[in-house]
Amino acid sequence: MMKRWKTVLLLLGFCLFLVSCSGSNSPADVVVAYYNALVAGDASSLSQLSCADWEQQSKLMLDSFTGVKARVDNIVCSELENDGSSAAVNCKGKIIATYGTEDQEIDLSNTTFLLQKQGGEWLVCGQK
View 1 (cartoon, rainbow, N blue to C red):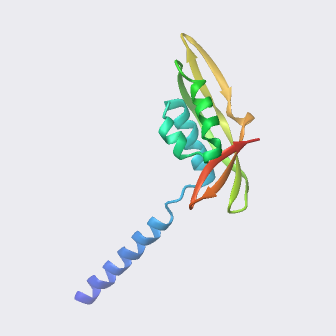
View 2 (cartoon, one colour; view 1 turned 90 degrees about the horizontal axis):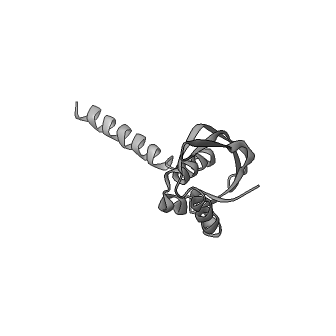
View 3 (spheres, rainbow, N blue to C red; view 1 turned 180 degrees about the vertical axis):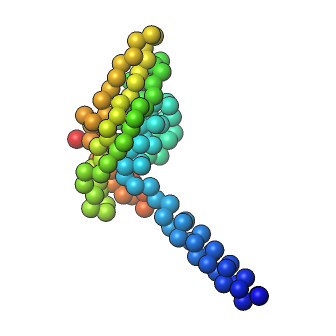
């Protein structure tokens, strides 16, 4: 009986190890998080999802949504390229920004984000 518990605990520990190793998000997941942070006005998250060289551009993009209620609608992102250290991601869907009572739709497919893997994490570093 004790041997069986040791085996179960060993397997459980191994499973937890595998889950912790797979914690890195895909480039597409990072871009979804980036868009969600953008419309939520979350400067801290945008900074964490951006390369140092891209942080200023992220802040400018964030400023464009100041005073506007915005949301992401039907977003689906996919990798166009990925060589393990850099990737290009394009999304389908839109941002709906409400100015007063008028909605403006921003088509996400017009932007392809360039990402780099730094410190084991994918970061938004530019756009095409």
